[in-house]
Image (tube, rainbow, N blue to C red; front, top):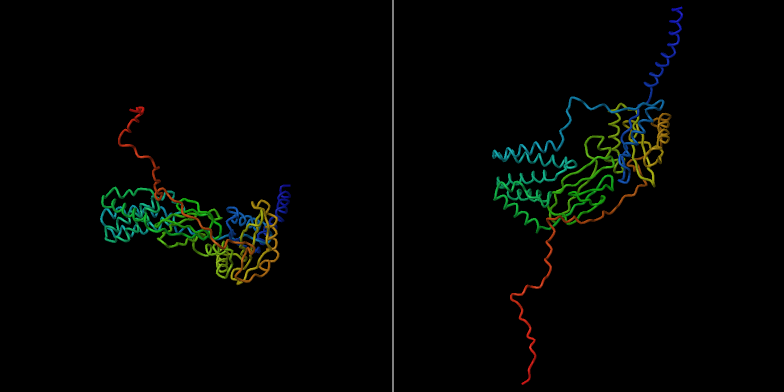
Length: 415
């Protein structure tokens, strides 16, 4: 009886084992597909819509028979992540302060250059502009000490511009430096203003300058005081970006707001956000596909169409010189009902592979029907308290210098 029971269990287990082996073989034969992040091509697309579309398509490919999701290799643990820019800036400021106290002005100046570069890189997370102003003021003091007066005055101008109306703490350490600060402040008041032009990828991003909202890019800002100014913006992916722009009198500085980073992923993101797919972007997509071990690569864009969104996608095999365009999908703005359309894309890829869609020549516009503003709007830099002229006192009648004589009301007596 026990032997019969064991035989029965064994026979029952054999089909399951065979089925499991067949499943493993099917997964091994499945086509590996890498889904690269979709990019919004305009600022009116809901925040993080591209990331949500990417995740939903990857989920559909993962459960589609004949397909397997190819994921990029995890980051190496051997190389530590780079330090935060603001941490680098603050450490460099400590080094510069100590070097100046030791009268090692060359080391102090080098440390301040690193600090200012790091502050510019971390400007999006810089909550208090006074840190940047103190760095400029310290560099001014170091350069005055070494006889580089013109460069020192320029640094002091940046310090006063980036935090208008704020006193310079370093001025309290030296009466001579305090007088220099007031002289540069007075000179700055009389200097001609400059301008800043903001351009963004994708177009339409809202930007701020010194905390003042300016509208959406492209935008031209006039009457900007000379010196350094902090700008910030938020990309459709939800990533905050920012930087420092140095304005010169009677000159227009240009700031290009775009996705940050380097490497093939950043190059592809920049191209797609600019509604452009060219050979360089295709090479970047191929490199990312090879790194993930994928046989197929899918990439695309998200754009606004009426109350909803449009998804435009391309498929290629790593190394292809021309992609193939998949049929455009129209989905709701929240992507809540995007499952069925994306499932159709996945089924097409499983059935046709790299032959899915129609061949597209390069360069191509993923979202061909998106209109962009050609001319930038123009705004005036908001006047700060430091530059507001004092109102003239109201006109009043001068006070008399003596008491008026009492009127003589005696009647006239005829003789």
